[in-house]
Length: 584
Image 1 (cartoon, rainbow, N blue to C red):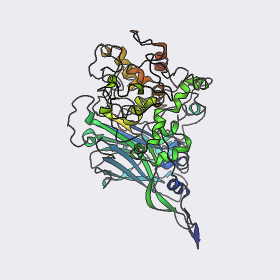
Image 2 (image 1 turned 45 degrees about the horizontal axis):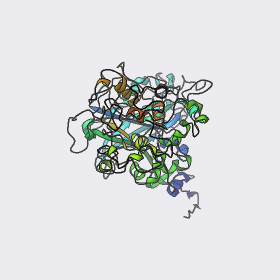
Image 3 (image 1 turned 120 degrees about the vertical axis):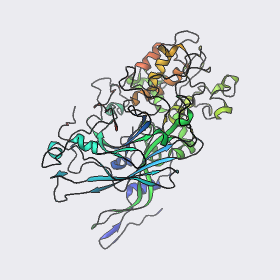
């Protein structure tokens, strides 16, 4: 492909290098995403960079679901004079899939932003009641798979950055308060959604320094540090009535707390026009087809699962494109992280992961080490008849072949959702047989797409002030279902606290880094009765040291640096530029 860069007089056309490269990328390969600077190309385009995605039933309004997509990683609160804000010529979108029988999104929310300078004569961002880089937005909604969009909110207000007291409170600034400015950004769309777009404290918490220092989390020496403490992001938050998100034909009231008709898949993206024209006497002009440059579904997929050579290709795919291209599947069947949780591989190279060990001899018969067969030896046998592993139930989706051991746990947990079908029930009531019926605890199965957050909207809310509320999400629900009365005294379907936690959706409080590392270490296998190697099959007590080590593992950073709010948009207000010193 040839590209001509030419000049005529004082104006010259240039295909913006970023977008040209995106169109030229043809290689493909996969995996899982919090996406702070997760891929080479998007790292150079922070305004379009997805950082995190959340989907949960609203704790104070459980007839609604809150969807939050965050963008612009690592915003320094004192980053003037050109403070961070949403970008123009970017389509920010939140996508919802609610029908497994149809490939593609059923609902899409689209946001586009306009930026104006109310007083271009000053270098200050705010002065005498006027604001520069003032952002407003248009919100559109599609309910026909993206064929058409309707405007449901115009001239939406984006709160200013929390610059400092003189800019916000004083008479030479806005003469307001930041809580008042923040509240003014909470708006109602004509279609029934409550909406907020603006700067917030980054809700993700993780020791980025330790994590990317070859997996030193928790740190073996020194102090664990939340690498995102005191940084902001820009968030798009939508509170949507559950009735709006239901698939066509679903009952108005769920049949039970795991009703399959109430499952949705959520992903977010950012797109830019393919061409940018630069001029020496005018602002850049953008044109051409819209090109997806960033996306996010499950936290930490692209960031720590996809190898660096494939990250840009991953960002340009939809979950439906990705699922259709099976070369990505290997990253889930044999995840790289599992190699550092296996003493026969590279377990000794990452001492921080010492408590995390993959089952190599579960029940003295099943090996889930990378390259091994896991449960594939049971394929086609009477042992799996009628279960999710039976070819007559889901085909070869969960047992695709030999040498792909994590197709039965990592693959459904992070890529298709988990069905409430044997063996995906807690070991409670199984009497030692992992392929027997047990206690239901999750159903968010939506196998027509790839990397998305999947949420069962029928699952009740665990209130944040409930003593049983846990940042461990579904892992904690599984522990309660296996060990705590009354849940462990029967195999009935009943609500267990934290069944509404990650990976059944994602709450702001969920410690997704820890949960995902525990999952790679086989905690899902253990939950359904495929216990760790130090358990002897037939022993009445499966609570072994290996299991305790995995369940008590932590990364050293377990909560956000600011408390979340109890009402929409739930996110903490952004850090103030005059208050923050980002140093340790």
